[in-house]
Image (tube, rainbow, N blue to C red):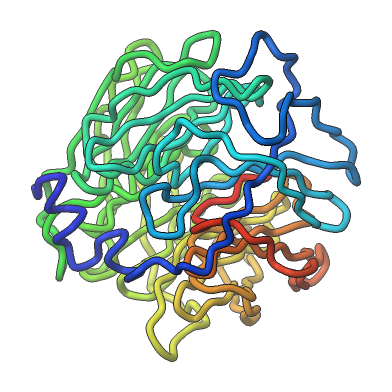
Length: 403
C-alpha cells in the first residue's frame, strides 16, 4: 500500500496529476446560497456575502439551493463552498456568497433530512466537515485517517457518513449525531489487496456508496481495479468485507451509479476510458462486472468521470473529461443494458462531476479547468440535452450539488 503523500503526488493516475495545471480562467465571483428548510438556530460562525439565510422555495419553478465544490489550494481556486440558487424552470444560476472555513471542499453531500451539508477536505491530512444549512454554521471537522479524501456519502439511515481516501486507499466511517455533527471515526478500512493495477503505485479509493436496498456499502478503488462490498454494522459503524468485484486490469474504476431498480449499476473506468454495466445481487452484495463499452469518446485522450441516472431509470449520462462531453445512453432491459445515443458538448473544459436536479429536469456539469458550471434541460422523452443559457462562472468547479 502506498503512503498518503506518495499516493497523491506520485501515482501515474493521481487526482490532480491527471488534470495538469488547473485552469486559471475561473472567475473569482462569489456564489450564493439558499438556506435549507430548517430555521436558523443562531448566528453563523462563517459569515457569507449573501447575508442571512432564507427558506428555499420548494415549488417547481422557484429558486432552489445549489452548492459548489472547489479546491481552495489550487491556483485560481475558490475560497470555500460556493453558495448559489438556480431557477428550476429556466436553469439560471444566481450566485450570492461563499461559505468559508472548509478547505478544499472538492465533493459535497447532504443529509437525508436536508439540514446538514457534508464536505471532504481533500488534503494530505484528510478530513470531513459538517455545515448546518439553516445558518451556514460549520459544525466542525473530523479526520478521515487517510490522505486526500475525494468522495463522501451519507448512509440512508442518516446515522453514518462514509468517505473515500484517494491518496491512501481507505474508507472511513463517522457517526452523525442528532444535530448533524460528526463524531470520532468509527472505522477505517484500507485496501491492501489485490496488488495495484498497471501504472498505479497503490490503492486509490475513489468512491463509497450505499446500495439502493441499504444492505451493503460499496467502495470503488481506482488503484486496485476493484469494487469492494461491505456490510455496515448499524450499531457500531464497523465495516466487514463480504465480496470483491475485479475489473479488467488497467480499467481504473472511478464511480459507480445504481439503476433505480437496484439490480444493476454503471461503472465509469477512468484509466481505460470505458463504461461497464454491472449486475448486483442485493442478498449477497456481489457485483458482477460486464464487458467494457464505449464512452462515446474514442478519439483523443479521455477520462470518464461520473454517471447520473434518471429517477425513472430510462436514461443515463456520463461526464467525459478530455472529450468535454456528456454521453447519453438509453437504459434498456430493466437496467441490464446501455445503448449509446450520442454525446453533447459540455460547453466547458474537463467536466469533473455531473448531477441531476431532484425533479430530473436539469443536469449540472462542474467543469474544472474552465471554472464553470453548465446547466442543461433534460428531455424526459428522448434523453436529449439542451444548454440552459451561458455556463455559470465558478472557481475550479469540481462538484455541483443541486437540491
